[in-house]
Length: 270
Image (cartoon, rainbow, N blue to C red; front, side):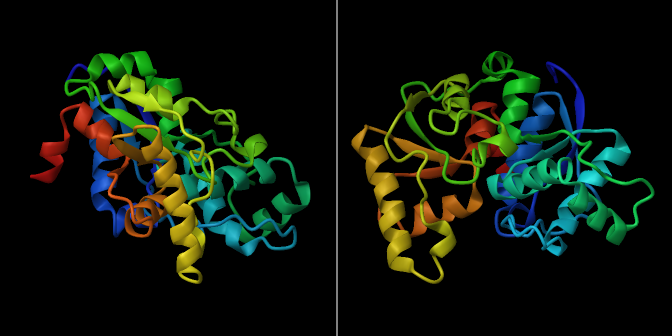
């Protein structure tokens, strides 16, 4: 298949990509394979919890993330996530357990692992894998359907970059990773004011009007700068920007555009 490299990752898809958004998971898997990346899903992973609890005396919600991290450690592999919410929870858990001895003691005492887990696993977001393992230059060479002439606005949202010390993916105020991804697939990135601001996804159920206001502000900001489409790395943001913003501007998950650029989208839809 002309792969540029071959690396194996423990792959955590998360709940949404295994239920309501299976196509986005399929795009991630097929694209990784085409780029020489093997994704192996643990057999018994659990929901990450969806949000990271910052209370220092609350460790129960972190147990499933640690189980997944430890599974990757036992296999001697990095862990890769594709959902920004899952990534945020798992990466923050990994960061804190490596620095908080009391937290590590309590969690390891509860889980009774063969060997204590103290943050040994390297965690990648799929976008980081494209940048740091594959390389955007190598990705660009694999593109068969470039998004030439398409102005694409990257929506980062709240969870992909913050807190920046724990996630350490990119500059939280002036990121470039998604814009560089857009360039690699042949598109033209659009910089707009609301790309790092909250879309209101987490309040959709309790305050739909506020969620609509926030998501509308994001989409209007992108449209004002001439965007033809918006891409995101968060399934919740994807839903909110599509359903609640009132905008007709198309919104896509980044793995869908990746699969299309690599000539894999039709194969996934057969």
